Image (tube, rainbow, N blue to C red; front, side, top):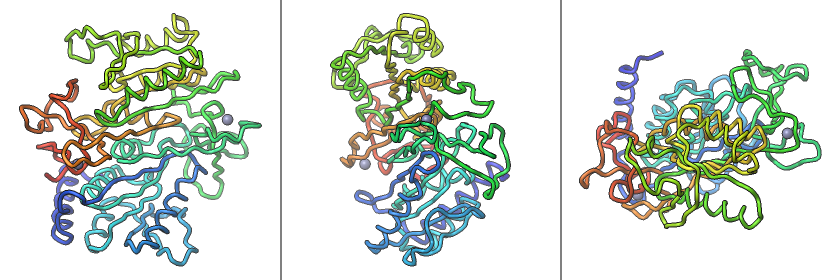
Length: 429
Ligand SMILES: [Zn+2]
Ligand SMILES: [Zn+2]
């Protein structure tokens, strides 16, 4: 395991080598983004990568594909137009390889969950420097535990597609709602971590209701009732329309006469103690409003929905998810497993462009994710995914406090290329 300092030195050297050999990207109009596919086994993630590779060939775009050393690739090799994938175990090697070939403008990475954590930095670096990154991986392992690397990449991605499969146990339903991967040994679910054995391993896609997780996953399995709960996360940067999307959905449930509840975190948590008089309303940036129940701890949401005033609800809306406590992800999953439809809005990244509190785990354990985009306040790109904090007209320093709510005077939306964080040790300024 390299130390933090060693890692930083490697990253510095790689940056210099990259710039030296390929030059700096030249401002507006330079591409470079991360498109990430996640989802369970047999949900078609690698197929998407294969299609991306084929399109690149048709369009004469030079690309390289990387997979983790020693694993069988899912990007078919028999297609003679597709060059053989490189097998890589150290994420930095990808940059080493790319630096040496100026013409490569797309990089494909399959099975990101098997790479070391540096893959997140490597993918961000490539996207920041004009390379189109297409990646795929498991966000949950076969025990239902979050893969931290893929989860972080879900936050970093400019475009996120959570694929679903068809559950083996949902008899009579071909509806693709499987978001979990069950590992079976002689037909029995594996609930302990076992060595990866390509030969004996049997992996099946399962829905939330039929998936049996490992012992560490505290929200466990669903009770045996007819309801299918779900966890749907609406995420994105500031001004991407998350709250507006929640309110639009709530209006649809009004029309359908369905019962729902709406929750917001106590502004005392949110505003560092400052009271907000509009507290019991959800108010979008466009001025639409909705009554909401204020809770100071996520356990209160669970109590209200299981035995309190909201137990008649079918759908539970929660906004500003990033401000909640550490139990939040567990609470949302417990409610979904009980049969509630849980729809959550929240920021994926903080102003530094790093995953906001528990949001990466929320994205990973959800059944559906919509990553919304804002318009970049600098270049008018339609794909802004970062929240730019401004202090006295200048970009806020990396070391500033993370939780700092504010409106247009303090934040604007930016694309990854125009997002500025002075003092960010992980990004080239
Ligand atoms: Zn099922
Ligand atoms: Zn921009």
